[in-house]
Image 1: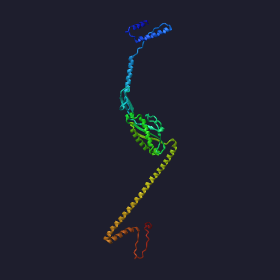
Image 2: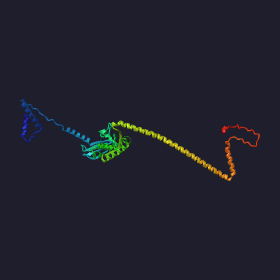
Image 3: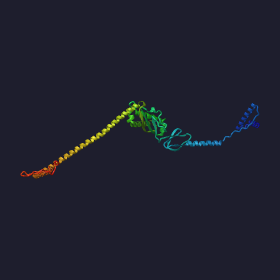
Length: 364
C-alpha cells in the first residue's frame, strides 16, 4: 500500500507520469477499504483487484459471421412457380421478376412482394368454404352481403362466387390501396344492380344464366375503370333463396308452379303425339285419293285411246271390224255364262235333259 501510495505521489509530482485506468481503479478500491476499516476500527486488509480481459478477437469473429449470415439471408429470395415478384428499391417500383431464385440488395434496400399472378383466386359472397387460402375470400358479414331486393320489391338471399386473376402486379400494388376489398365492394354493387332489374322468379328460376353474364360484364367494366390490375374471369350464382320468414309460403308457390308446368308438359306431350298422327293419317288418305284419281284418269285416257284406235279401223273396214268386235265380245261374255245347249226350233221329238255335270250355284 505504501509502495502504491509512493508511486501515486510520485506520479502526481511528475507531470510526465500518466495515471492508468488500472491504477485509478486500484486506488479507488483501496480507499473504500480504508474508509470501511476506519469506520469499524479494524485492521486494514489489502487485496489486489485485477480487471478481466475482454476476448476481442472471438467477439469480432462472431459479429462478422452474423453479418455474413444476415447479408446472405437478405440478398437472395425465391419466387414460386405460380407467382411473380415485384421488386421495390427504397420503396419505389423497380421491376417484376419471373419465378425462380433471384438476388437483391440487402439490408432492406430492395424489398420484394410476391403475388400469385398465375393462380386463379376467388371471392365468396353470402357464404365461405372452410380451408381457404386467400385471406380476402370469405365474407365479413355473409347475411348482409346476400340480402337483396329484386325488381318486383321481393327479398332474396343471393350467394355467388367471383373468380379473378391478378393481371397487372404494378397496378394491383400501387394504384389502389386495397384492391381485393375494392373488388369485393364493386362486385357486391354490380350484383345488387343486376338483381334489382329482375323479378324474384327470374332470379330463382329462369334468369340465372343471364344474371351471371350481366354481372360479369359489369364487374369487368368497373375493374378496368378503377385500374385494379385484376381480370375478372367468371361469376357463378350458387344458392338463391327467399328469407326464412317466407320460405314455407314460397315453397308452396313453387310447388304449384311446378305442378302447372308439369300439367302443361303432359298436355304438350299428348298434343305432340296426337297431332302428328292425325296429320299422318290425313296425308295418307290424301295420297290414296290422289293415287285413285290418277288411276281412273289413266284408265279413262287408255279407254279413249283404245276406242279411237278401233274407230279408225272401223272407218277403214266397217263390216270386218264389226264382226271382229262381235266375236271378241262374245269370247269374253260366253265363258262367263256357263254351259249352254242350243236347240233348233225345227227339231221334233227331242227329250230335254237337265245338265247335271256342273253345280249351277257355283257358277252363279
